[in-house]
Image (cartoon, rainbow, N blue to C red; front, side, top):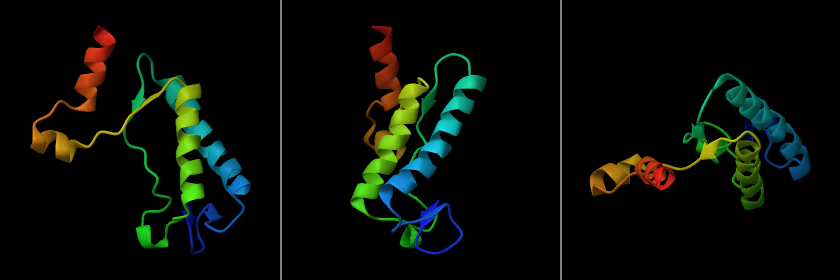
Length: 109
């Protein structure tokens, strides 16, 4: 995890390429493991740009966060994992179809 205090995998002010290298190793490991042990369709709806559990101590540099998202999406593509964001609070309260329903309908056509 990236943060402004010690104890994580990197500090927020480290060179972005150093952070990318460390992060790529983590997300590739996840993607490879998920792909290896999951048969059939795979999806990830629980990914985040939060680099640490305490948002006050997490990284907030826009360039770093864009890279953070790019690396996650890259790993999903390589390992054939569908990535989507599902906002259940709004989907449930607004009574609109969820992304899962939309994606299922789209794939069945």
